Structures are given as C-alpha cells and as structure tokens.
Image 1 (cartoon, one colour):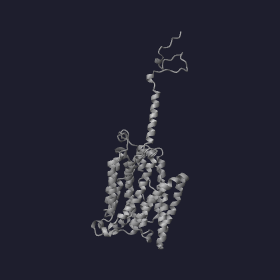
Image 2: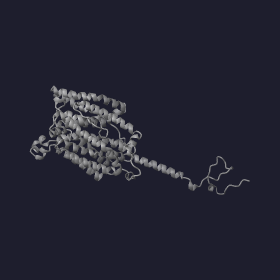
Image 3: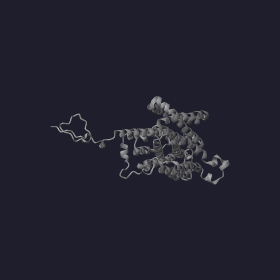
Image 4: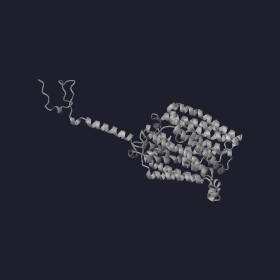
Length: 451
C-alpha cells in the first residue's frame, strides 16, 4: 500500500522524492528559500532605469568649461615661445644663425623626453591621489617653470627651465580622464569637441601672445623703451603673462573643480596593485592603438626631418600629436626665422606668430567643421589617404615660397604663403580621433593617455 502524501504540500523538500514520484512533476520548495521573482524584476527594471538616467544626465557645463580653461594652458605655454625662441637662442648663446636650429631642436627634444619619461607616472598618480590634486599641482608647476624661462641668460638655463616645464606633464592626462568621467556616452562627443576646440584655441593664442609681448622695448619703444627690466629681459613679459594664465587655471581648478575619481578607486588597497606596463600593453586593443599611432609619429618625424637641412632627431613626445603640430613646433619656427639666403623666410617674431596663429586657427576649422562631413561621406581611410597626399604638396609649396622671396616676388609670396597655410592645415584631419579612454578600464585608459 502506498502511503498518502503529506498533508502540507508546501513543506515537501526537494529531497522528498522516491520511486513513485512522477518524472515530470514540479518539485515544490519552501517559499522562504526561493527567490522573489517580482523583486528580481523590479531590481532589473530599476537598474535599467538608473542606466537610462545616467545616459540622459546633462553635461555639467561649468565643470567642462573649467577643464577647457585648464586645457588651453598647455598649448599656450608650449607655443608661446616659438615666435622668439630662435632669436632668443641666437642672442643668448652667441651662435651662428645656421646653428640655431640645432639648439632649438635640442631644447624641445629634451622637453619632450622629460614629458615622455614622466607622463605614465602622472597617470598612476592620478589614479592613486585623485585627478584634481594632480591637475592643480601640474598647472602650478607649469606656471612657475614657464615664467622662469624668460629670465634665462644661457643655453643651459633655457634647457633647465624647459625641462622643468616638461616635468609637470600631468595636466592633459587628468583633463582627458575628467572630461570622460564628467560625461556619458551620449554627451561625450560634445564634451570632447570642447576639448579639441580649446586645444586649437591655445595653438592660435600662444604664438600671438609670444610674438606680441616679446621684446617690448623694441616693439613699443614709446612705452617701454629705456626701462632696464624690459631691455635686460626682453622675453620675460610673454613668459610671465603665460605663467599667470597657468596660475589662474590652477587656482580656478582648486576652488571650483570637483573630483571625478570614484572614492572606491581612490582608496584602493595595496592588495590590488595597478597593472604593470607589460600587462597594459598586452591588454586587448592597446597594442594596436600604440602601433598605429607610433607609425603615424614615425611618418611625422620622417617628413619633418626632410623639410629643413639642419634638422635634429626628435624623440617621442607625450601623447599622439598631429603631424601639423610637430611641423609647427619644431621645424616651422626655425624655417620662418632663418634668412632667405639660407633657405628660410627671414621672418620677425611677430610675423612668425601670425603665421603660426593662422595655422592653429585653420586646424581648428578643418577639424571641427570639415572633418565630420568628409568622414561621413568618404570614410576614415579615404580622409587619411587624402591627407597623406597633401603632405608632400605642402612641403613643396613651402620651398616655393623661399624661391619667391629669392626672386623678390613678394606679392606672389604673400598670396601663396597664407593660402597654403590655411588650406594645407587640413592635413591635421588625419589625426582627429575620439577619446579612447572610455573603451578601457581605469589603468589602461590612463596608460594610453600617458603614451
């Protein structure tokens, strides 16, 4: 005789099964031990709603503007010296004009080498100490080093203060990360468009400030002529002014910028150490990014070295800059400064600043206005190929400009020169890129920003 089932069906456990139990019977378990499906559904919906809320979160415009103000400091500080650096080296070192290019390249190469050696370390520091303190400290250091540069009286002082500025290279790493952390996937493109625009704005303003403020006793003798300070330190005014801009950015960031690093990441224990450099390089996607941009930079150096006879080796700079950026940083100021008889344009510091400002403004216009529709219509590959074709043409036109000046065809030079700069700056589109930080985790994103 088969025993009757227990009176309390709900009390049957999953183990109360014998040979009489139907194969397709649904085992009944204690409701207290089963998950609440309604609660799980509500939790899932809640998470989805929170994700949608995060995506719809408006861009914190005030925070982005503070970051953009901090962003504009680096290109202004970097580019402001180029209208006068060659003349400053010539006067300070008592060199032959043909040797100025070597020392100009040496100073900027050592600056870049210093940045390269410390950039990844700044990224790790931002992960450990927070974005805001590293950013404020870096801006303060740039302010001091840039201001001191204008007081240099020897070549070695120029090198020392320029390398000191390279030590404080953590601002760009922090700014990129903070813009990513202040935005959502829906607002990130807009946030980084501000970032790109302010970078080009700095390229535009830096040469203008340097050229307009250098040697005030010579440029504005009715106001500054005969004053000892301006005659003894003719290049101190632009560097002090740029240093004040950097100091104001540091102060504004300290007072009003909000920390974006998650406190859990900020307080990460030593038992969870950051990834080593080999581990970061082996991470998915990282090696491809580094090889691609390394190849781009190799092409940049090859073109740059081929343009001017007295060129120097230029090591890897922090971050992946555009070829137009490298071209205007190292070769163009020397090319513009060098006498026509030696293959250059023989420009004054003010003329150098105007040409470089035109290049920066043109790059901003091409990147912000021309690149998006061209990329949508022709694709990234065709845009890159078109820019590659444009490079040799741009260099040929530069040499043609020297030919015009040698023939004293000044009208032809002043027609072709500015137009070639405005149109030729379109090659900077080859290096327009969206932020890659959000595609990687914390350590990898900071590593790629550093490289």
